[in-house]
Image (cartoon, rainbow, N blue to C red; front, top):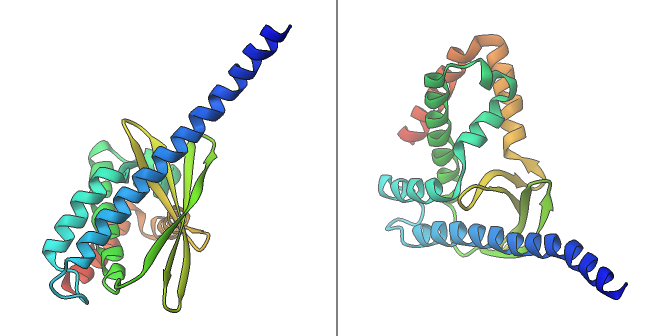
Length: 198
């Protein structure tokens, strides 16, 4: 009886142990991307500007740690399946550049802020890593949602509880309803061009 009880305990505990290890790995992935982005920001020649050289570095970092295809697919929801493979690839590429440019611009004000790691938790097959960005008069909770392929990849970010994916999904749905997919691509390209110009 004791032997059976011991085996059952091992059976139940192993998945929990695996998830605990997975949570640590997911948190480590977030630490890596945040540390690498921070290094780029601190090494800038002009602390108020994100240069093309900086954008190239950000592009390389995000390509390692983000699943832009999953993010793009989620942002279009049911409309994704209506696209041809070439259109999907075009959208992913534009969506990625828009995200990098948009958030690269927001990172331009990064100076002496610090990032605290508050742990991770499982959400279905995903892991959510909680962090908090702190500055002089700043305290912003940011959560990273990751799934695992060859390694952990970020596919959604929640800032103060607001999901990046949900926000884009709502916005894109409205544009597609009025202007179709081609209209959405025109809008995104216009925004991208404006960000590049600035």
